[in-house]
Length: 305
Length: 251
Image (cartoon, rainbow over all chains, first blue to last red; front, side, top):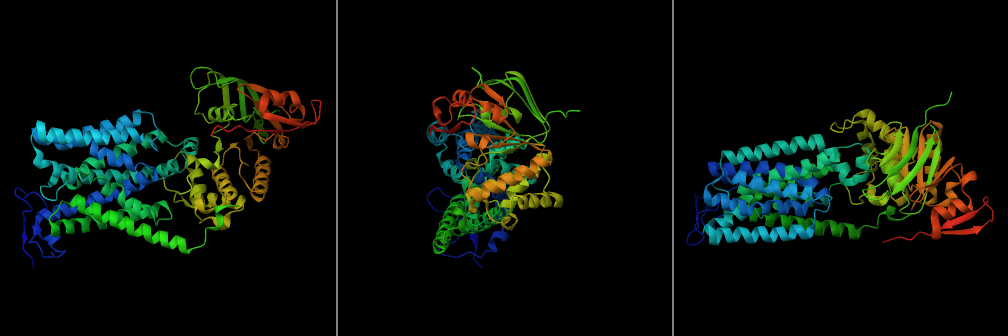
C-alpha cells in the first residue's frame, strides 16, 4: 500500500493535497485513510449535493455566467481577509451578497444579468485580487490556493458551512423547485399564475452566492463553476425532465468530486482544477455522444407542421 | 336578474410612467361571453391584459376580474429546449391554486391529463414540449390554462402560427369553455376572425369602439383602429366591410 506523504512540487510547495510518491498510483481507499482526505471527501460530497441541485436551476435559468462571476467576485475580498486574518467566509459572503444584490437591483432579467458588466467584473476582480496579493499584502504564495482551492486545511467550520449550503439547497429545491422550473420555462406565464417570481429569483441568486462561498476553500474562487455549472450542463444533455436533471446533476457532481479528489491525491494538484478538467472532459465526451446519436436519427417529427 | 360581469373596466387608463399607453377603456363581459380585443401591435392589447392579470396598476379608473384569470401567452415566449413534457407544462396550471410549494398530487395530475385530453393531446402527454409542432405546443399551453380552472381566460393571439387542425381544436375548446360559463378575452390583429365573437373591443392607445362585431366593425372604426395598417378590400358603407391588416414588425 502506498505511503501517503506530502509531495513537494516546487521550492516552496507543501500546500496542496497530501499525495503519494510520484509515479505511484494511490488506492481509492486512501481517500478514507487519513482524516485530512476524509474531511476533503465529506466537503466535496456536500458541495456536490449543493452544486448539483442549484446547478440544475442555474443551467435552466441561463445563470451560468452569474455562478462563475459570483465566485470570482469574492477573490479580492478573500485576499484581504487572508492577509489580515479576517474571516474569509464573512468577507466572501459580503462580496458575493453585494454582487448578487447588484445583479438583482440592476433590475435586469435574471436570464440576462448583463454579460458585458459581468465580464468587466471578472477582469476587475481577478486583476484587483492579484494586485492586492502581490503588491499590497505581498501574500502571493496564497493566490493559487484562493483561486484553485486546496484539499488540506479544510476544517469543521468549512464542513458546517457546506452542510448548511447543501441543506438550504435541498430545502429550496423542494419548496421552490416547481416555481423555479415554471419561471425558467415561461416567466410571463409564471407571474400570471400568481407565483412569487421575484422572491424565487432572489432566493436562487442568494443560494448560489452562499453555495459559491462555501465552495471557496475546496475548489477556489475561479473554479466554483466546476461544481455549479459543469455537472448540470452534462446532465442536461441527457435529462428529459427536471427531476432527472436534478438527480443526474447531483450524481455527476458527486462522481466528479470523488474522482477529482482522487486525481488531486494522485497528482498532488489542488482538487479544483482536477474536478474542472474531469468535468470538461465528461461534457466533451457526452456532447459528442449525444451529437452522434442525434445525427444518426431522423429529424423529430414535430419540428414543423 | 342580470349576473355580475366576469370582467369589467370603467374609465381605465394604463401606462408605464409618463403618458398613458392606453386610456378611455370602458367595457363589460358577462360570464360565458367571448370578447375579441382587436388592435394593431402596440395598440394596448397586452397592456390591457397585464392590468387584468393584476401586474399593472391603473393610472385612472378601475378594473375587476372574477378570480385569477388564466393566461395563454404567445408560444414564442416559451423555451423549446426546456426539459419538460406536455404533461409537465399542463401541470404548471395547478400552481395557480396558491400552494406552489407542494408537489403535484394525484388529483392535479388527473386534471392536467384531462386538460390534455380536451385539447386532443392525451397521447402526447410524455412527449417533450420542444418536440411538438407549433400548433400542438399552443394546445399544450391552452391545457395549462384549462388546468388552472379559471372563470376568465386571457388568450394572446392564440391562433398565431397554428396549423388548421390545431386551430379547429382550439376553437372547439373555446365553444366548450363558453358553454361552461367561462369568459374568454382573445387578442388578435385579424379583423376577419374578430367577426366570430360576441363582442369586440377595438384599441389603438385608447378605446376606439366596444360592442358587437356587426355594430362596430365598420370602415370608420377599422380605419381609426389600424390607421395606415388597414387595407379595405370591399364594401363602401359601415357594414359588410372586408379588410385585412398589414403588420409592421419592428424586428
